[in-house]
Length: 207
Ligand SMILES: N[C@@H](CCC(=O)N[C@@H](CS)C(=O)NCC(=O)O)C(=O)O
Image 1 (cartoon, rainbow, N blue to C red):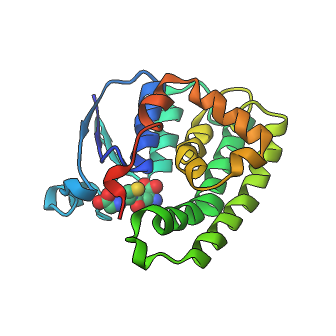
Image 2: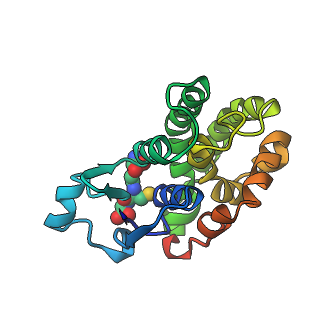
């Protein structure tokens, strides 16, 4: 059985649990990281020297970095052929998410949720909101002619970006601005694993 280490309040862990549920895989979760601790133990650092979450183990294989975990799970247990156009286009959107969306999402989330109010800087928050909007313009174009970011089938690229959407919708008005992005999010909201893993509160992270 697959073993997953990580706390459920982390978007990087959520994208792994969402994948495990979509792929109907049995797994055992060990809650570590954040207020739960455990990521600085010698045992954990042997599995993941960065001391971050998530980490998984599947038989002999032990990996960390959430997008690598997604690629592993979907290539081994999913249905999109790994050498196909659809696979690589999905891969491209996963990289796009990590490079163009994730840094601004994290900074905005810290500015508006995680930092104590006295330490927040509205100028920084506005900058990251604007950068997110620029990135979502490309996503909007992609979704204009494709139901899923992956293409015809729902896949790991939809999860990589989709895992950020509830928090992004709370902090920006991109769903009002981008019509196709909005219907994609509504399609995600109709999936049970999304409701179970992504439509959850993040009260324990508030500064
Ligand atoms: N690029 C890494 C980032 C991992 C990361 O920064 N995880 C955060 C949670 S989202 C973490 O471990 N924070 C410290 C903690 O939870 O103890 C990935 O995608 O897996």
